[in-house]
Length: 142
Image (cartoon, rainbow, N blue to C red; front, side, top):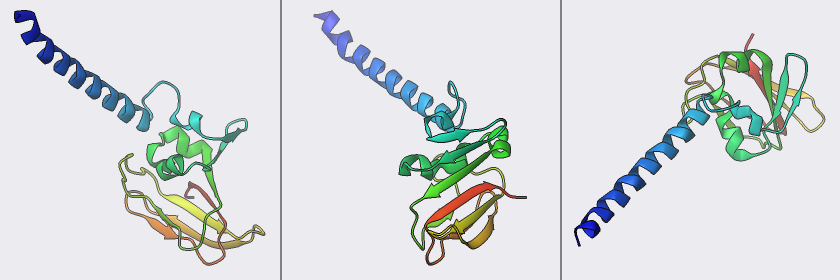
């Protein structure tokens, strides 16, 4: 009978430990500290010292450069296809971490004509897609 008294607390402690471990693992992956690069999950084109990420998945697109390392900022741009006018791009921490560098964003129409360019400041910058925007390209500000 005494063994049953210890079974519930033992299971409870194991469950809490497992939840904490999973939460730690998710946070370290989101901050770029997990095994491999977080950007490995993105559709991408790799070049010699450069890569282009395609933000086709909304969950990944919401992370954007919030999870970027110093090297990621230096050698990566992100293309956001299929955006609409008034889509808001925000550099604030939305649970993935703060964007650590200023970003440049360029909005294009369906004919690839540049409609608007903005610099979004690290930590609190934002930009709103203009009328006719269909694509956005984001990268390190000059």
